[in-house]
Image (cartoon, rainbow, N blue to C red; front, side):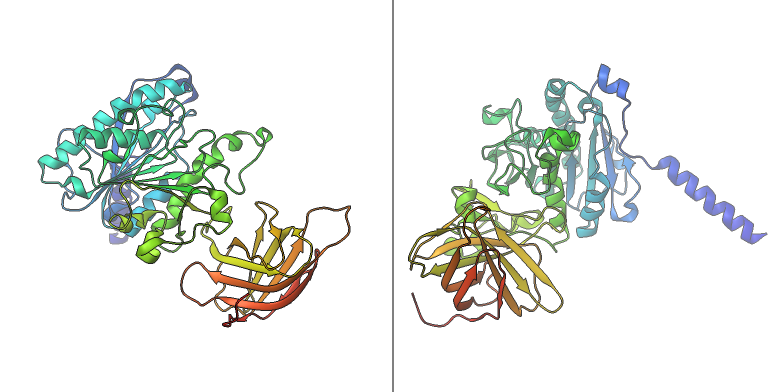
Length: 449
């Protein structure tokens, strides 16, 4: 009998929990076609009950004892939702943020306002959403909360909403993270009409789709441009791929940021005039701060707040893999040849360890290899090698109908961009086109060329 009573009690608890838990509300296609009035729902998640959202009151914070104003508060604000569906990344970012820090996590559900096929209507609604969030943050302040402990993470239109909220508090919000802030209707606008560096004490921005849905110019104290800020690896290149063609680059910003939250996959970013210069190894000097001048992109970038110019004088570039884990292992590759004639071609480098290998194909351009002139390139490997045993090189011109070429290498030097290991070299290597040559590298000697 007691066993059955226990089961009944457990079922009752589960039913009550299901009745009290709330979540992001999807809309029907009718809603998105006709449109709906703005309605902002604030969903609180904490470590106590990370999978159960509590719908917050906009007027009575005391009704939610699980909201602790002494803890940091993070708001996650989505963007345009033309189908009215919940963002695919919402549950994952919630789990990662709660696992990383003991915070009040507030998911801002403004699907009523963002869920419409009319993008311009959604843009108009952003100020109403910002005013709603502003009123709630005022409520936090009334209960003793500190503006410096608030972090707004805004995606697309959500990035500009974050900026409007920050402006309402005259830049006293602790941090705003803009993930591929929306470009259409905001490009060319004045700072008060979009996200800008004065909106928070620290504004970090990621660009992944600046040639389409995202914003091209700088918006924050520090602006990261992943893979140049436009086309992301493994994203479709033609419209025949369907809706993924339109949203893959844009949505990649959230995926890249999520990969950094637990601290296991962060990419070092380098100040540079262009992504091409970064790929050519021209921007690897991290100035007088040492590696502190080259921040890690993502969740931990705020650690560089006091080491970088405010606002930044440069764009910060890094490259990624096409899927998670997105972070690459980067080396600078310097090659000196002794061919009499100038050769042009691509280089593929492989690293070999114990039952593991990593590959990097340097293909952003066909570099020129001239006698006794050092050619520098950045090689981004798809994974780290714990114990490097061997290296291989392959030279290829990309031309099928021409005679095969040879590249006579006087010295190749591989320098890890993370200053953990010393550079490795190999001297006197002959590469025949399209043939992989494998060798054991050695610590670089004192000889210069």
